[in-house]
Image 1: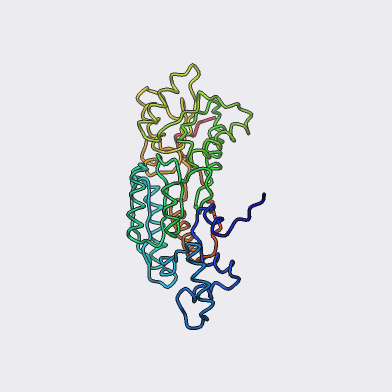
Image 2 (image 1 turned 45 degrees about the horizontal axis):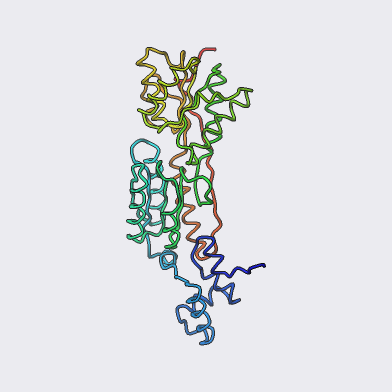
Length: 353
């Protein structure tokens, strides 16, 4: 038997609170009428007010005070949650957010999860308690589900992800075309004559690392090369992890002649391990990283890396937040802004062919 889903049931299934737009749609009136009726405006008749209040109670409508205050220019705090502040990438993203927020008259509260989902949950509770107008967030490496983000949605607070997000979720986010960046990096190594290109891969439940692995595979396929699973090593993206994975790769019967890492810290670890073994970079093993951290320009040799357009990412994340605010109670349309990468070629990957 077919079941007609009521607006409230539909909203519950979608995981979002009932909005004024939902009430207006069900009663066949404008959102202005709903808004004025809920605030007992004198221009709305008693019968209409009664109908609106009755339906609002029935549908468990909760007014979005934060969004309303923001539209009136009262709320001027925005929360930012990042995995860590060390290094160039997240610091530059935050700078981009702060510069855009400052121009719009906002102040920014910055929290670090330290790659810990427990701390990430605490960060969200802190920001919700501070009644921020919105939250911009890059998920921790140990985040595997969306449950604690639903709390933000249920509070009616706009939530925008940047760089990292969970796979399989429809979200508002600003991301890099990681797949293309990884393809370019691996393609560059292949063009240098390398044929056994290894990949240091990050946790595959996160979008950035899954897409970087796919870009690596794309480049191999374009050269008619079959992936060797022994050359793909999942790494925690730290220097120590890079050293450990590089040691494992060198122990193979057929070691790699190049390594593309999904992160710069891990490729730095690989460089350190190769030097300790007396191997030359790039003559024996060519190296490419991802993020274009400041460290890539102070190593010997300097490291080739994919730039992530970090400051632009921060500015775009704030603009997307503002778009959500301006949409008000209109049912949200999930948007993803995709930035294009740029490969910075340096000595660690340049061979004399």
